[in-house]
Image 1 (cartoon, helix red, strand yellow):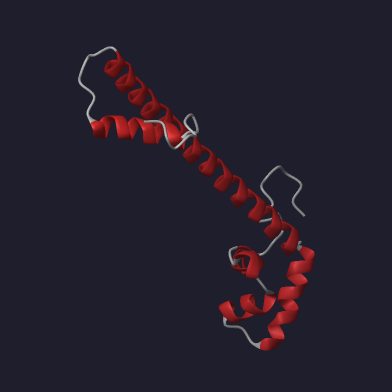
Image 2: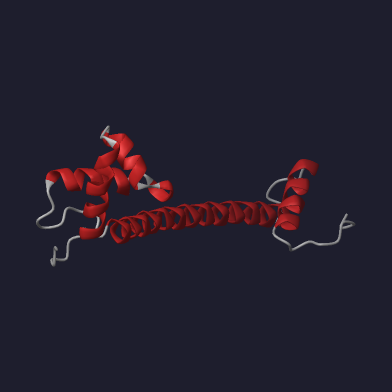
Length: 136
């Protein structure tokens, strides 16, 4: 077995090319993976399942594949977090624009059209600052 700090889903020391190829097929199948699917993907005879099972035991396929799934999940979570941060920045920028328009209207910088006031009122309703429907 490999004792270095390499990720578990990479090739182990002593793992043959054939065994690793079969493992990568298994690993990349995701949560619906199975040894029978690996057998089919390899185009091997049914009796070859024993070899696949042997490799799976020897090289801890389930544990390695689970580790790989966890790794991918971590990447997805990081991506989602970055997307949420982007949405928050955009919402904040929009909020600042709306508030600046409101300040400009109250300071008389430009006349408030009904559409502008409706937009600002709708915005504040959305963010929960106005709850009463009879504000006007």
